[in-house]
Length: 315
Image (cartoon, rainbow, N blue to C red; front, top):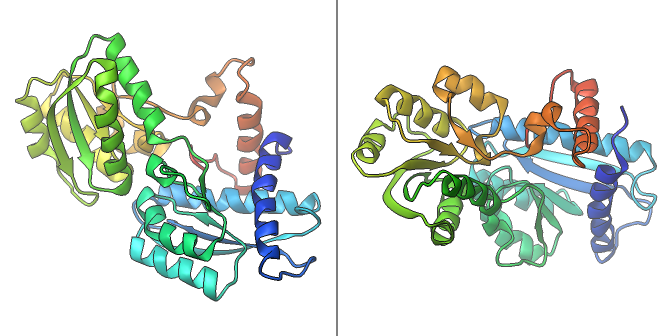
């Protein structure tokens, strides 16, 4: 199935920005637009980075088959930062100074994205981030953009659900990652709007393998619900520990875990977990009248035709 024009044209428009930026660096009119990508193909965010790279190549091939952007084909140079901010910095430096890219795409995580923003702003190269933290684009940065929904919107949906359920006392369990810290900052700003009070505030590291101590302290508080801010394996460990301890309060997760991989990791411990999610993960359940459905089905089918597997939620 062909990719819908709305999605293809959005990407083409974003890349067209790079053409004009490249013109200032004396690029040849018929030279390919060189895209530089730094993604977490391995490491804790691989469930995001691998499908991101595959999606990027899918659209590059599709756009080139349609004649490119403003008559210029697209080429890709990509590196795997493994979710490491220092590696991301090194690769972005290489992409700018050695590879001579016209536009940068990447930053699978908020942490790797924010680590490279100062360098990119100095270089004045258009940068499209794939990270979820609102801090990527606030305050506004001239050369920095992002595609996924932000943690602010995800948390607002979670808090709205809590309000409808009469929950007023909240416990936070936050990952010490870029996304975790950005989400906590947004949650702290929003709680008052939803009649919530934070009565417990705990943290865990991305590489922690047990969170029972933090959850035990939360159990001993008067929290009526628990919100976990993180992505990858950490929230899955929290969910399993939560079930093992027999906690009864509602457990909320953000869009950072809205993936089939999370469901597979937590197994039966995930029963009853509530989370906000983009629509792709439930695309088959959307009504035909939903404006997102046709776009998402076309993308899913094109991805599956090329790679023989379904795309991840944030591909």
